[in-house]
Image 1: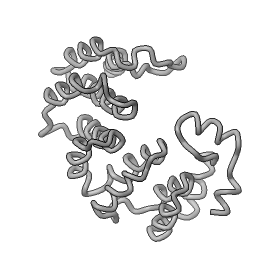
Image 2: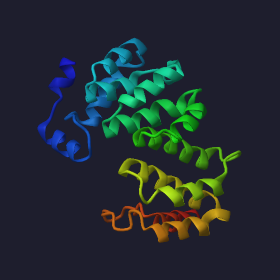
Image 3: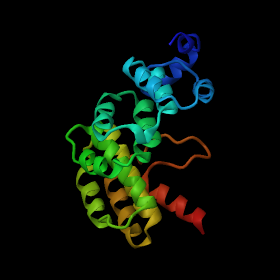
Image 4: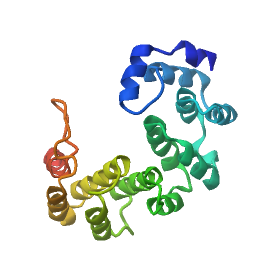
Length: 212
């Protein structure tokens, strides 16, 4: 913890806080610490328990994802409120867990929008990598009905799923674009030059064009 405190940079904190993260540690330096520590599950538990954002990010880099029980993962998600912790937890830990499908189903239907967004992130991963068994048309139905009014984090996750369906599955592409156009979610989101807009119709069209 003292080492992490020494890495605190006020400028980095200012940037991170604008993105919903309450820490000031440069992520490159944090990854260097993780590389030195290597995998240490016991230390990862102790770092997570501090409730410090930088410490929790480090914990996610040095843990063994398959070592966590389903109950532990559920509890961790519900306390992972910083945006980067939430993102890394889902992508670096849950996606590698043997419990990911059970959690995907449970979290997607959770009344907590932050928890539900994690379920949708796992669904998006399946849409891209393991779509067999998914009701893609049904997912688009749910997105069409709920995305417009969803809180920001959940809306973003549902929008990503809609875009991924359109990108990866040509038979659903026209409908995904149509739903995106009618809902208009993230249509005016500021996008830096050279980056792809998160607005689903533009995102789908751009990514499909790159595949050709």
